[in-house]
Length: 111
Image (cartoon, rainbow, N blue to C red):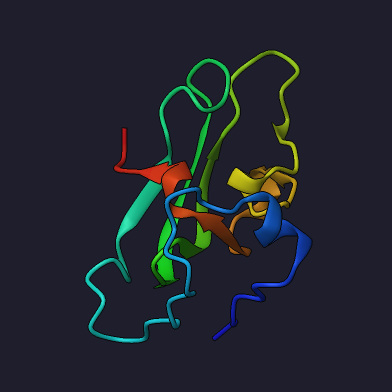
């Protein structure tokens, strides 16, 4: 299981403003979010574009997600640029199966 590196540049840029001052430990087992299917928030990307995945681990502020679906709408759209809400990873159709760490406030229920 991957451990979230709290000192990385990605985590610093994606810091959640209302996160507690002390970092929460990684929760393994007993967390009802693990195994749930989530998608990027509606309207976060242009049109009906979104990416979805299965939560493999979670803590107070972040999800560790395995990408399972990518929908990049638009004539020349081939994916999503690197940003905190993509785990600072370029996500496209061929990204299915990769795992990324994203802030919880970037993800929501399937839409």
